[in-house]
Structure formats: C-alpha cells, structure tokens
Length: 247
Length: 101
Image (tube, rainbow over all chains, first blue to last red):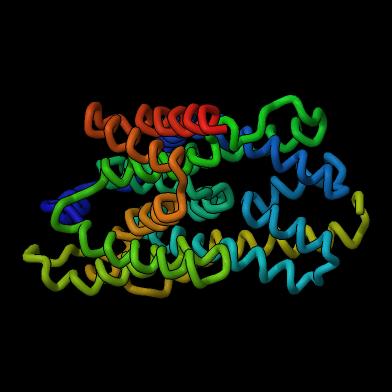
C-alpha cells in the first residue's frame, strides 16, 4: 500500500507480548463507552424479549455481535428454527471471514492460543484500529487482543447493566452513538488515505456498498465493499512499480 | 425461555456459528500462500470496509448525519487526530438531532 512498505515488513519481527496487549487496551478506550451503551441497549432488548439477565449475558459473551444478536433474538421470537438462526448469524458475521484473513500475515506469527483467543474477541472497531496501527508500524500482535478486551468487557458489562437495571440511560441514538462507528471509520479513512493506492479500491468499495445497501439483504454492505475494494487492490497490484514484497 | 435446554442448544449453535466466522478466515489462510498480490488485496480490506460503513450513512443520512461527517472531515483536516474527530462527529450528530427534534 505504501512506498517502502515491503522492506519494512521484512525487517520487522512480529511479536505477541503483554506490552502489545496493554497498548491495544489503552488505544481502544475511546471506543469502550459506545460499546457499553450498546450493551445496555441489548440488555434491555433481551429482557423485553423474555430472556433472563443470565441468558442475555451468556449470549453477549458467546455470540458477541450486536447486529447478529438482535437479529437472532427477533428470529427466536418468531419461532425460527436453529438452522434459520444460525444462517442469520453467519450472514451478519460473514465480514469476519475477511477480517480474520487480513490478520493472518500479522496475527499468524502469534502462538495459536493467543491468535485464536484474540479472534474470539474480534470486533469491527478493534479490527480496524489494529489494522490501522499495524499499517503505521505496530508489530506486536498483542495489540489485537488488548483492543479486543477493551471492547469485549464493556459489551458484557453493558448487557449486565441493561438486563439488570433497565431504563436509566438515554437511547444510543439520542447520544449520537449509533454514529460512533461511522465517525470512527470516516476519521480513520482520512487518516489512512493514500493518494495513489486508495482511490480505486475506495471507488469500487463505494459502488459495491451503494448497490448492496440498496438491493442486498442487511449484512451484505460491508462484505460487498470489503471484497470489492480488496479485489480491485489485488487486481491493480501489477501496476505497482515496486518489486513484489517477500511474503 | 429462561435457561431452558432448548435455548442453551440454540445459544451453543449461535456461538459456534459466530466463532466460525471469526476464526474461519484466519484459519483458511493457513492453506493459502500469501502472494504479493493477495497481500495487497488484504491490506486494502480495512479501507474498503470503512468505505462500506460510511457510504450508507452518507447516502441515506439526513442533516444530522451529513453534519457529523462534515465535522469529522474538518476535525481531521485541522488536527489529524482520529479520536478527537470521531468524538466531535458524534457530538455534532447528537446536537443536530436535539436541535431538529
């Protein structure tokens, strides 16, 4: 993506240490409040759907995906079968296949327990944050685990509070928190933008996102954009004057 | 459905499905040689996903959302601090919604 990046990769040693975990945990703190409020909302919603607090927390701790959990709750409420609910969750979480694949060159250097544990805690925001800092030179894959912990913990705490206490917090919409991930992405997009490398993948992603947003079922927009952007970047790779990196 | 065996089975199935997505892409890449071209594609994925998150908000957003995006862009241009830009954008959306409500 950047000039001189392949040389940097070769000379970099990928590690997985608690210093990286700590850096990730601290760097993801600004995201924690938004996740917490969403957790509270999910707790309330689960309570309204007839789940106990324990069930709600169990669901948050095992499924760990706001959109998939809400969709599954509504499907369960309508008496959907296990297969239908599983398909819903897989569709809404299909983007994680791409996230995991993109982490392989970096997180693959970590011990398997660390890597697969980090993946358990993977979310949209902490993946984006991790890829961003990795692009900027962070080589400690502990960052992925740390930023995952920083967003997983408030999700559980929020679910617990929402399920236990109920309505004392204004809705995330009134606080603008439904916009948090959009604002985060818009800011990082500008931070990561590189004049030559970014334009065509971003255009492809935009067209794919607009089309999927309009015609595909919910859950496909991010997948379509990610695949289209990645495909164009891969396809245009031959135009890159740099020698290919030793991968 | 509180802690009924049926619900716990359902939850187990959903948890496995969710984790299969989280770990599946990473696991599959064990069997695929990461060529320079594939690496270029994977490196572009975060940017493309960000476009995928922002595009629908920009396309179907009202005045608050578009104001929020403008505030993020201005804040980034001014200070290049993404946390500050993010929080300023969220605050702008909340204020605009309160004003327009």
